[in-house]
Every structure is written in structure tokens, then in C-alpha cells.
Length: 373
Ligand code: F6R
Ligand code: MG
Ligand code: MG
Image 1 (cartoon, protein in one colour):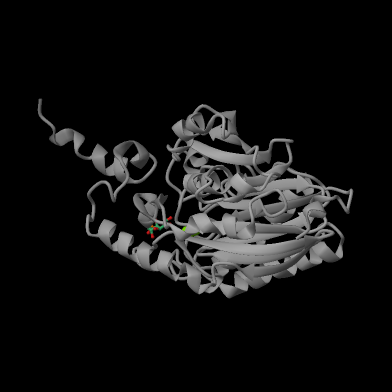
Image 2 (cartoon, rainbow, N blue to C red):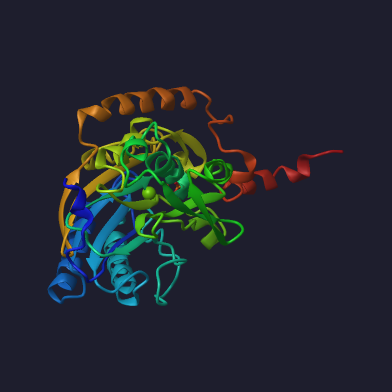
């Protein structure tokens, strides 16, 4: 790609909205039913014909229905969020009819109120002016928490051992800015790398508490956006794992697509897996293999690659459907086996603090009468 590839060719900013929800599993929590996917495609095709959205792609990672949409209405557009809510509502009706497992699980509100954030579904969105060529990767996870992207986003945008462009490409050499969401403090913190790399790691090394929300170039151009919604904090109790999504733009002054995928060659350990209560390796898989079965896992991630062309989603390419990720899958199985052998013991099971939103406290309550001073 020539160096001037970042030259702007389309002035109208396009928005990529990835909105997802678990509205019912098939079988158990392992996958999405083909009729649910067909329903979502039908509804979004209608919205495309009506001109509401420019383009769409419907996918699934485990029991999560993933809606990838492009449009011209910007982030947090009521029309787009309402469209996703309608698809999830219709899908819930069908899931109930099919008696799918956990039908309507992530639909935590009774009625749509303008924005799906805080209502159950997960959202990652970004708005940008398309470059001459606009490659993006949409990551979707299942059986994991939103902090699952901290490690790979750090590697992509701040670690020269992952992204050689940070060292040898003058257009990336100055580094990137990170916006970190403090889940419990309800605030966002901005840190610039490489200057504040150690400060960044102080926070994001604790992915249950701090989540990378966005990454920007030093000039303020959006480079990555992730979903940061925590279902348990919305519902106040365990209602399934958050199973996050993330959008990353690549090439020409941003990490190359290969540098964006590279962090997933190491199946880092995330919280989630069975009952959202265990640590397990994040296994990079093809869309066809995104059907967690062993102990409801191990956690999965898929990578959908698109070229965005005047709002059209050219693709996807199933980026982890590649033998170069076989070793990561093998290692994930080995790490998974090692952790599984711990059974109900930590550190396979989450620490007590992170178990607060699971069903464990109800069991512990029963022990109260049995204690003696
Ligand atoms: C993990 C997940 C599953 C369920 C498990 C028990 O995110 O959704 O591991 O937690 O299958 O489900 P219930 O309690 O519905 O029988
Ligand atoms: Mg489920
Ligand atoms: Mg799920």
C-alpha cells in the first residue's frame, strides 16, 4: 500500500456499529440457532433497502448474535440502536417459540429508551472518514468479560515486540493514546503511549476493573473501539457473561492486519468460561468453530475482516480460519486442561470478589447458620 493511502477519498464520515446480544442459545449456551440468524439478516436487509443502514453483516460467536452495521448517523444514533433492539426483540420472540435456552437473556429492559447501552446488549462503535482503503477487523468474544481486549489492544498499539511498525514505520513511531474506562469509578482516563506506558499497565493489568474503551492516534483519529458494558453491573446479579466486541482499523499508519491479529497467537487467560466464574484461555477460532462446548468453553474469539468501501462492508474474511493459529488453539487446549484439573479451586475459579455477581453468594448465605465463633 503506498504511503499516501491514508489520503481521504470520501468526506462523509461513516459509522461502524457492532451491536450484540445473547437472546437464546442452541444447544444450551453453545451456539446460535440458524433461524435466529436468518431472522436478523431479513430485518437488516429491510433496513438496508429502506436506506436506514448502508450495509450489514450478521454473525454469531457462540450464543451471541452479532450485528455489524454501517450507516451515516454517527455513534449512539437512536435509529440504529432502535433497529438493533427491534431485531433482538423479534429474535427473542422466535427464540421463545423455539424454546431456545435462555431466550431473551440479555434483554434487561422492557422497552427501548433511545440507546441500547445499559439495556443489556453490548455495543462497539466508531465514526471516521474513510481512507483511500479502509481495512477493519471486528472481534467478537464468547464466554469472556469485556476486559478480554485489554491484553490484545495493548499488544497491537503499544508493544513493539508485537507491532514492529511502532519501531520502523515513521507514521506510527510516536505511538497511540488509550481511553480507559474505570468500571467501578464510572470515569474515563486518557493515557498516552509510549510515555505513560507503565501507568497504562497499572490500570489495564486489572481487566475486571479497567477496560480499554478506545484507542486513538496522537492526532485524535479513532483506531479501535470496544464494548465496555458489564451485564452484572447493569442487572445487579449474574445474567451471563458480557461476551464483548471490538472494532480495529488497520494499515497505513495504524497496525497492519497481521499486527492486529498477532496478539491472539497467545491464548491469554480471561475470566468467563463456565457460569462466568472461571479463568480460561481465549481461543482464536474460525466462525464455524465458535461453538464453545467443553465446560461451556473454553472462551472463544472470532475475527471478521472487512474492507469498508463507501459504507459497504466488503467481506468478511474469516481471519482466524488459518493454520497459523493452530498452535494457539493447541496451547489453549493444553492451558484449558491444566486449569480444568483444578476443578472448583482457585485460580481456575475466580477470586471471591469477582464471584460476587455469580450464584455463589446464595450458597454462602446458607452457611451463615452453621458458623460458630
Ligand atoms: C457462561 C454461560 C454458561 C452458563 C451455564 C449454566 O457465560 O452462560 O456457562 O452459566 O451453562 O447455565 P444455567 O444456570 O442457565 O443452567
Ligand atoms: Mg447464553
Ligand atoms: Mg455468550
